Amino acid sequence: MIHTPTNIALDNNRIYVRDQAEDWQYNWPLHTHRGLEIYYFIQGQANYIIGDAIYDLQPGDMLLFRGDVIHRVNPSNEVKYVRSYINFTPEFIKQELSNELYEKIMKVFDNPNGFHLHWLPEEREEIGRYFKALHNENQREFFGYQYMLKSLLTQLLVHVYRKSKYLMEITPSMQLSNSQLTVQRILQYVNQVYKSNESLDTMASQLHLSKYYMCHCFKEITGYTINSYMMRKRVDEAKRLLLESGETISALSEQLGFNSTIHFSRTFKQYAGMSPQAFRKAINNK
Image (tube, rainbow, N blue to C red; front, top):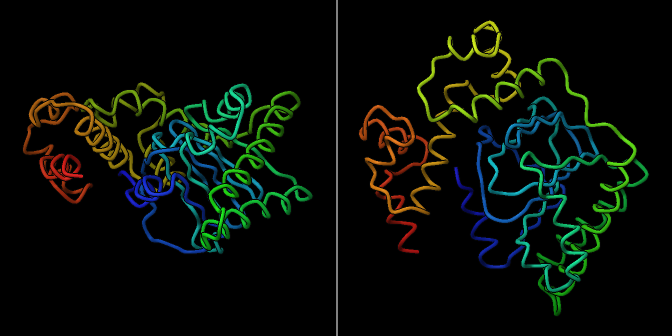
């Protein structure tokens, strides 16, 4: 689903910051939003899906990605889950940087499956100070706070760029477990065929996996069944098309692989809370 609160915050202020958030929700949905995100994992047990990739998080991990890539965190409820994150629009900092520096920093957000960094224990205190300072400026809105926000965010991103450049030169990519590698293969496949009505049997055959193992592994890692994930992907794509195209509901239904317009409308309402027609009307009236 589209995460409306994030979009509203970015529309109003072009930046949204949370520091050491501990709130819990029983449903952590797949979602998208505008802008860019810096996610910093502090405590707990969790994995994070971004596009086709799965990240098994450890304290000190940071993920940088575009908000329009579908993503979801899947934390364990057995331990406290603590994270900080920043959502911002590229335009918010563009005027603060030279063209060369801006282009280099934006490259860390180029990967469609996100970019992963790990901050060592001795580095985390400094990174934590940036999030705390950004959060305080954003909350208090004292004189000159917008300048301070831009300055602090720019400094954090320069640190990120330096770290990313160093890591790309000396370290291999993050190692995944066999289960995570399997789910990554499934995600890559599903993200290609989600508009079709391909059966789980066919999918398992194409991936050379047993159907039971495929379904069990996917549910365990992502928290979703494969069919539920595919439907959510369809609805997310439907929202994008309803926003960006003038196609009829019937044409969109066929394009997205639904058996009928009625099936499309019912499924869309189930996941989005309103019909496709109501969604398009609500967006157009903003």
